[in-house]
Image (cartoon, rainbow, N blue to C red; front, side, top):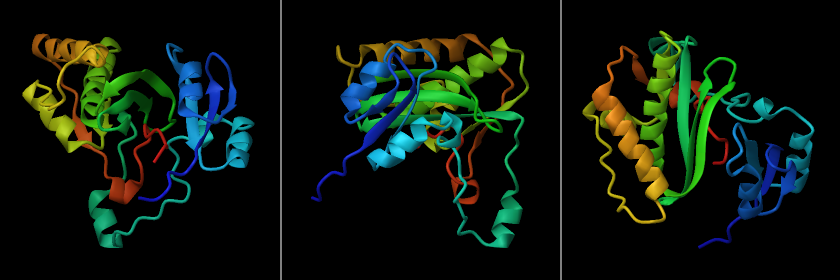
Length: 213
């Protein structure tokens, strides 16, 4: 196996801001900080430069994205519906540290974020993100749609069940507490929100992407 590349973490909003050299140091700044803004970079210089800029210029942007699809395919797919919110999750390992968030599709403004949690999976995070989005839109009497890049999470929401193989334990209890709440919400609430698959091959990464790939 190749040597794991070092990453540097820029924190724009957190208990402390700056560039941090380890994920644990970064996590300490963002844990329990509502609306935390952070992203990883492959070089210190890039992380330092980003710190002087705007978080939204670095997260969820597709400035260099060029689709490999044909013009005919792109025309068939069309453009995203910007009367929407986009949700996504990030997991460092599977299972591993997990978080999820929702943003305005057009402006990339963060609408909600949860985590990071010590143990979860990407699928669980995607499921929770959709349900959080449904509750958020209902609370605001919004007719916007939801975009997600997870077919698995969409199917779980439709079935009103989180079909994860992850076993419950003390470490992931906070995650499964949210899962139980999400399933309860789905069974006790109705909604008319349309949930659509984000067309990554045509549009690039979903706007809610954490930008840590």
